[in-house]
Image (cartoon, rainbow, N blue to C red; front, side, top):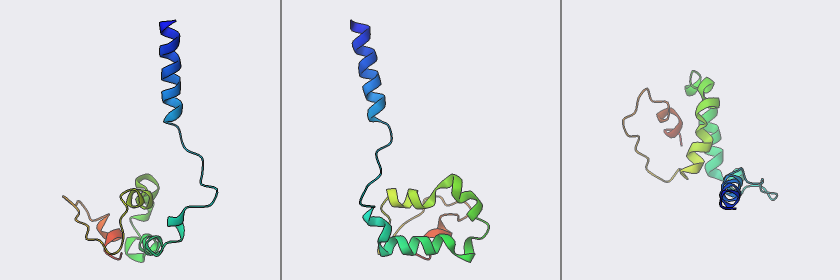
Length: 91
């Protein structure tokens, strides 16, 4: 009985960590001006060489997670080659 409860608890914990259902009404951030500026920055010619890595680094999702907005000051700690700088500077 003890192992059954442990297994059930583990299964429920894993299920709770799964992906959530998509928002039926759409995400309010999708139509925001901040997102439009981010989309423009990601498509900029300045980033021609960087675009190939976007699929692996997910810059739009990362900046949305951190809720980066155009009126904020963002500091890039220990920047490397400027990959995020070329995204954030136009915003």
